[in-house]
Each structure stands twice: as structure tokens, then as C-alpha cells.
Length: 241
Ligand code: UDP
Image (cartoon, rainbow, N blue to C red):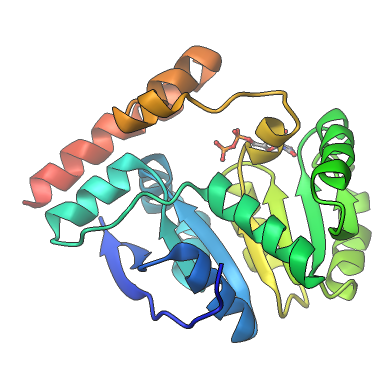
């Protein structure tokens, strides 16, 4: 990724802000150069959640960069005349880790189960030997442990923090973190599970057919209720004209 500044263009889908950028990797690096901020990866499910949950809505609205992750959001932007490529958050996060390893960035990882975090850090040490991990903490800490961990995290002055606590917690946690400044802070959902080898991403042919959601549903049937947001999203976008 080259660090040339590209100005993302802010628009919205169903009233939820999203940034159209030529290259999300470049936009993220430009944000880091400007002093950092929160990155949100927006899909259809999250758009509906942000409309229904004021705390998540506020976190998305105050994020420095909101990237269109998911076929639904790309489709809705297309109806507004924006031709954008889908930018899966997991790919941006991985590219940022590679960049971090090559440029001596200070990296922190928060979230995932204790076993996933252990496997993930072992794998990353192998796959990205230059990676400077200043903090790694699983996402099932006791309530008493969080404030100390948060202080340690902010004090570590990270350049990149990937947070896998699930939506909406990861977004609101980042937004409300006391003393946060500098660096890129990004919620990554189930990415740690995928990188640790615990979960699989949908095969590329399913991505091409835009039915990654179906793969996800088969892998995690308990998500069906959450996924009712998808037809609701499509209906709301179509109704807008
Ligand atoms: N998680 C966590 N602490 C919690 C709840 C969840 O660290 O209290 C982690 C969980 O282990 C998983 C991630 O958060 O790695 C959520 O992944 P999911 O695919 O559900 O993300 P979403 O679809 O909500 O973005």
C-alpha cells in the first residue's frame, strides 16, 4: 500500500454515513498520517443495527473512516450512482498488519477467545516476523480487568489496534475509550477466528455470487435472527427509490 493521500467522499446509506474511496488501504494510511482515528467497516446488518441502536449509530457517525464492507452496502451506493468496490474489513485489516510489520508500527490486538488469541499471536509471529506486538488481550476479561487493560493499551501508543469484540461492542468500546489518540482503531468482528484457523471465510465463488451471507448462516445457524436485517435493509433501500 502506498501512502498517497486520497480524499474519501462521505455519503450515507439509509442515513448511516459511509465513505467512498478509490482505495481503502490508501485512505487508512492517509488517516494514520493525519493523526489516526476509528475505522468502521459497514455492512447491511450493521447499517440496520446502527439505525436501531443510538450508541452504535453515534460510534459510526463519529468514526474517521467508514468503509463499505458487504455486497448490500455496495449495491445501495450503486443506486446512488457511486461505483465502489466491496472492501472486506478482514482484507483491509490484514493489509494493515502487513504494512505494520514492514514499517515498525506498534500493534495491539484485543478480542477473541483466550484460545483464539493464543493461536493468533503464535501464527502472526510466524507469518509476519517483523510485527511489533505491543499488547494482545483476549475479549473475555472480567469487568474489573478492563479499565487497567484500557489504560495499558492507550499508554502503549499503538499505531494500529484491531478489536474483535463483535458488533456493536467493538465500535462503541473504541469510540468511548478514555484517552485514545493517534493510531488506527478498527473493529474486525470474526477476523481473529478466521486468522487463527477456527472459522473459515466463504469461498471466493460465493463472494462473486454475493451469497457470503449464506455460507455464514450455514456455519453459524444461530445468526438467523440477526440476518433478518438483510431483507429489511434491501426493502428500506428500495423504498427510498
Ligand atoms: N468476542 C469477544 N468477547 C465477547 C464477545 C465476543 O472477544 O464478549 C469475540 C468473539 O470471540 C469473536 C468476535 O468477538 O472473535 C465476534 O465475532 P463475530 O463473527 O460474531 O463478529 P460480528 O459479526 O459481531 O462482527
